[in-house]
Length: 292
Image (cartoon, rainbow, N blue to C red; front, side):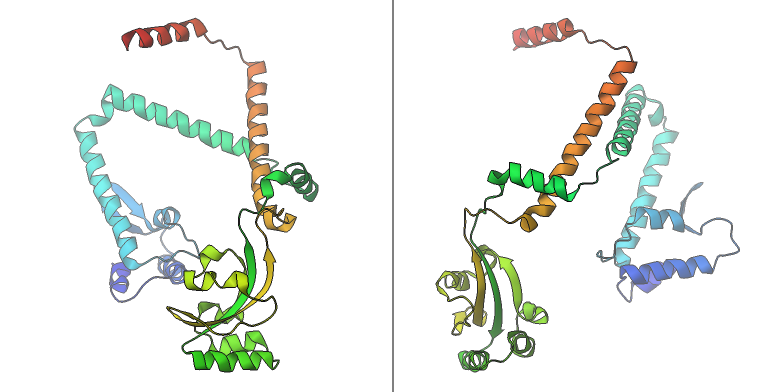
């Protein structure tokens, strides 16, 4: 109830949500079990279980409504589950077989993950070697431009800002003071980007601008941009190792996981007798062909 009342008046941010959890727990220190959030018959959803089920990710916004919906879904699911058991649904042969199959799949998946996730560390030498051997894969698919910009409301203001830049005033300083673009907090810096990430009426002008020189105010639907290109990487050029390092690391980790899996299967194959009747499978293929 406390969560519901608070949720009617304000949004939960993850940090605040954790604080409230800790507060509730601290108020129940004398209890040996976690406080109960919801109950259906003899089944309960505890505060600790709720904390485990709801991801406490710092980048995830959680509202009181979302938490209430989760609890409501738990209640509804438990109501249906208990009724299904009362009607003997869980004793049906097809249900038991499906549950058995799900349990097997989960055990296999968990075991494989535990085994294959070992020794996945990728060294700098491995990254460099992969980069050198597979350079054809890392050709730049589009032109990239390193730019910084300032967005203002009028041409007159844009001209004044450009004059200050030409006079030697720091670009980042002017961006923070005058720009209405979100990049102002970074001093107008966009880093390396492709033109498809820019407004079309701005993107068409970028290739014609002079490097290391602030442009005249460029009119767009959202205002006037003063753009300073700092560099260009042409389509078809080999991307630098730093650009693709993370991609290579992910690929090598996938390769290592596959190698770990093959080693696991090979080891188990050597220590366990097994057989496969391919003739039966061939007959199945013939039967299905004739049926069609």
